Image (tube, rainbow, N blue to C red; front, side, top):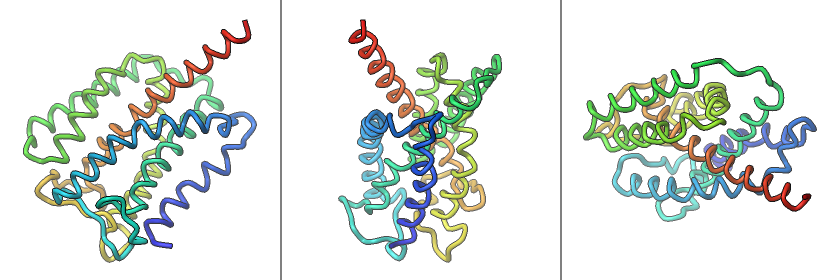
Length: 232
C-alpha cells in the first residue's frame, strides 16, 4: 500500500464504520451519495488531469501505487469519492445530533466573506491558474447557493471538516514527509502556506463540496417526494 493509499483508506475508515449508527443510518443513502459524488468527480477529475498535464501540480511516484488513469494516480481518483462521502456523512451527523444549530445571519456573513475574498484574490492574482479557478468557482457557487435551505448546514460541516482537512492535506503536501505527495507549481499559487498546505486549497475544497451538497440534497428531495407520491 502506498502512503497516499493509506491516507485515503484511513480517512474513509471512520465515517464508513459509523455509517451504521441508527440515528444517522447513513448506509441507507449510499446510492444518492455515490451518484452525487460521480456528478462532481467527473468535472473535477477533468480539471485535475488538465492541471497535471500543464504542470500546475503533480504527484510524487515515491508515495504512489503507480496505477494511473491518464496522468492521475489511482489514489487521486479515489480522493474524489472518499472526501465527498466523508463530508456528506459529517453533514448528516450534524443534522441528526444538533437540532438547535440555527444562528441568524451567520450563514449570510459566511457567504459574504467567501464571495468578497474570492473576488479579491481573483482580481489580485488572475495570472495564477490555481488561484484564479479555485477562487472564481467558489465565489460563483456561493452566489448561487447562499440562500438554499441547506446552506447553513453546509457551512457548519465545512467549518468542522477543516480539522481533518488540515491533517489529510498536510500529509499530502509534505508536512510529515521528506517530499510532498502532491506538489504545486509556485507560478500558479499565491505562495501562502498553512503549514505545508497552499492557501488556495481552502477554496478548492469549498468549490468541490458545495456543488456536491447541492446535488445530494436535490437527489434526496426528489427521492423523498417520489416516495410520498407512491404512498398516496
